[in-house]
Image (cartoon, rainbow, N blue to C red; front, side, top):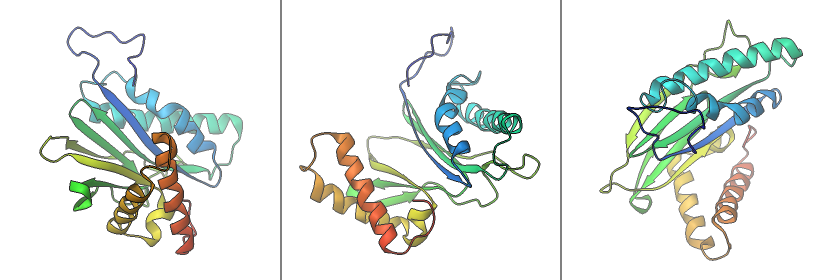
Length: 212
């Protein structure tokens, strides 16, 4: 994440940071597209980023919900449209995971011999919908990235992927793809895309009926 041009701080320098996220929309894609385009900026431009990432993320989620509802009211969009969100931000030596809804994630350690599920489904949390009924305050976890327990990969998935498979099975399938596809693609982007395609096809084959 590049430092915003208007960022000024005498006490907190801009950190090395990266952003990953998955947005799972329902009843349309207006809400998930809104989050895709705006949520990362809400986070990094919050007054508490980067000195207090948890507070910045929480504030950003709440602000995104408020702005989306206002936009929705003004444009008369589908009032039932909403989205789940799973966000990961690496800030220096820490990984922050923020979950709002039913998306899930898994971390692979030690060549897949150790895994950790990094989010739990919350059917009562999402963006969009009726602002009087919906909560969008995320569950946030902080994970220290250490050399003695290096991460192999982090995988975020929507409801449909984990509907038919447990975290261990998803991790094993990903490792099978890593080992079999390693030299078949010219770029990391196409390589990771090939793994995603394989997981999607597997979930469909197993009968998943939700978003994948």
